[in-house]
Figure (cartoon, rainbow, N blue to C red):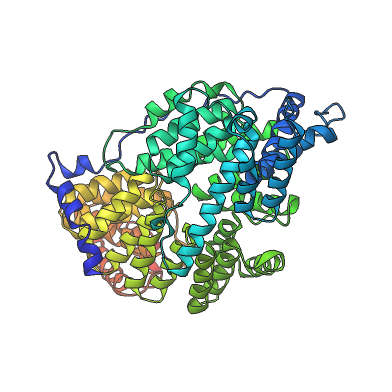
Length: 622
């Protein structure tokens, strides 16, 4: 732990020693990403016509993920007898482009596609080498299949070498075919002959693999402008933008978002941009804006399980677990074999402690496919809820064996190690999650919790601030940062952060009692009393009403009543003091005994003065 913490010492010291006050530097800057505009979609018939042709081309080129996504989008359009798209003929499915190639080229392409179907990517690329460069360039799908076959062949070799060398981080090993593919496509790009949208997509992912991210982003922008229906291109473009944002100082106001969206203006003319807007806003944790986009899209695609899942993720991020659960249940009813994002659904059931529903979900997904990362995480959550943490860790490790880049498994495994009181293993798991995805606030927050548990508040503050930068409107992040400042006796910053937490809607009602305690500790009694009075209002405690006998009191409510009892007594507000003391009679511990003493003092004072006791509350239990 000491070595891992020391690795970040230089970065933290640099931030602490920079000019300006620490409280002002830790505040997240406003994001200049443009807000989504109203969603405008063409007619369902036009959409279906576009999607049908594009889906056939994507399937022809073995871009199966994008092809599946488009096909699901097509069947999610409104039900109507008038909704008739272009039904592809047998000739168009064998070559879904207007211009057909010579028979020699078509036969070679058909053989290459057959090799793709059985995952023999090297053979697919090799059989197309018999075509001349002029033939390949004249028919871009043939060139794409040849180069894409080389790319997938290199990826397969990379994965095999990574497995044989027991490398934990696959990105250390590169694809050996990237340089050759880049040379071929760069020659076309330099002469202005690289105009096909799918070839531009391949060029973008090759440049991304070569760590030329700026060039990759330009290629992918051109790709979505030329062929906007390739959802994989949009996702890779978003990943590149996320990486560029994550590489910046998290407390810096600079952002690449503005320049990026300026280059994307041409692509914004197509309706597919709305799906990108929704996904990007969700990635940026602008969940309400993202949900607004998806609700508008749902009007045009009412049966889309993808849109319903994205809406569920928005509600989950907003901690609206009931509507999120309802949306996931709707997705399962529509598509019971869909496993994507069901690990998030299991998180909801875990938080709500619905053990029966979680058990049913686990049995259901195991029957579908038990060897997927999502299913392994669902099983891990089930064991965790039962308290069998070692079995839970085993399930999360199985998920990572299937996909070492599956961030939720790393984070959940870190949580389990925290439950097992193994902070060093938890830190390792959270760091692995950060290495995979620096935009996931849960990993940063988990690191902060781990170091805070070890009383290493300076290190915890560093990680909490990173989480806060990603979730600037989350009261929990503000409270975590405030707790560290409070433990470090930086009272002014702690008060500021607690106030921010209260401003952003503190659902757990953590900020107010802690803020009151800070004010009380530094002698600001009136400010502390104001915080406690506001807490009583939020808890629906009316001091003007009779207390309910035998009602159990929350610890924060006991603290508030105890402080206000003393404060009102010192201020001479005896009626309010008596009410607080009377309510404390339903508590246990030292506060109850002190309340009895205060009530006795009040009766003595009132009796000595010849006056009546302020109310009749104190006659009970005396």
